[in-house]
Amino acid sequence: MEKELMEKKNDLITRAEEVLNSAKEEKRELTDAEAQELAEIRDNVRRIMKTLEIKGEFDKMEGNALEKEGLPKNEVKQEEETRALEEEKAFEDYIRGVVTNERAANMTLTDNGAVIPTTIANRIIKKVYDISPILERSSKYNVKGNLELPYYDVETQTINVGWATEFQELESNVGKFDSISLTGYLAGALSLVSRSLINNSQFDIVGFVVDEMAYSIHRFIENTLLNGSGSVTGLSTLTNVKNAAASTTLTADELIEAQGQVKDVYQGNAIWIMSTATRDALRLLKDNVGRYLLNDDITAPFGKVLLGKPVYVSDNMPDMAAGENAIYYGDMTGLATKFSEDMNIQVLREKYATQHAVGVVGWLEFDSKVENAQKIVTIKMAGTKPSL
Image (cartoon, rainbow, N blue to C red; front, side, top):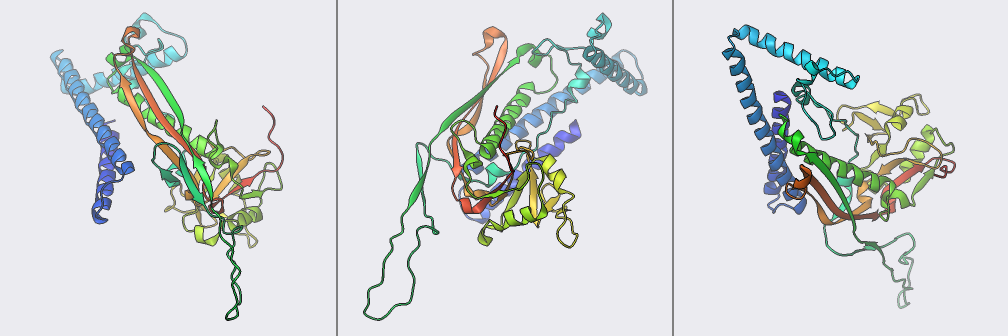
């Protein structure tokens, strides 16, 4: 645990230095997003330092207690290992529904009446979800109220250019601007944490829940951007579509043709976004000369490139099925996201005191629409989605 926390702390400090150095080199002030990121890094580092400090105190107290019992130092470690095995066995018995009075002595309460031994509590591993960088790469606008983005379609608003003769008038064609309107839709999340759990835990349970809340909101935003949700459309209304011939499989030609539907000028920062199952299915695809399209590349974020571009997987992306947008490809700045209210997470220590609980609440207000359809293409599987 100590090693992982120290590594996380060092990584956070390194990231903070990168943000500060970038602003210094460019001789500018921090952006709102950078200031928010640095504030979150500062809070996370403080929590890690506090956790390490408390853990050190408990370790020292436990070691002193064992030595006071007259145990030689070489037996202290053995005693700790024995205790860990007993607690793991108690935890296993609880999962299996077998809890004896002797086992119960090794357990502590959680918010739902279940029990977690101290050894297991220090080894909690959260489930990891794959999240694509679509939010980070989108065109973000942090403004209050409605936002109107002017949009000029060069394909339909063509300016006449042609051969001319002296002293003859040119034919004019005035370009016309359309607009994309972004408003703001409020989303919130609330979690209650038992004070008994907080008081009986060795680790910073409130900090853990706060981090999980932020992570869950990030996952919610990503799902909304990829699939649309409620009044926020995200990429779900994308008009640049490559229709697949089949409902559950893709061909190499279809991937190549989809990539070609993004203009060359936008290819530089293009990425692929798909589900893990879709990526696994594409591993077997080859081009006309027998070369695999999906290749290993240790320099790519997820270790894979497809037709020379990084592949990101997301658990929010649907697998290849009838009527689904199974893959997105392109420069994700073609998607506009507007935050009227920055995501903020608050700990409510008094509001739920009568319930012997602490509340953790998160709020954000945002909207998202396609800003430039030429930058992104979706591969839509054949068929129609089954009705719910």
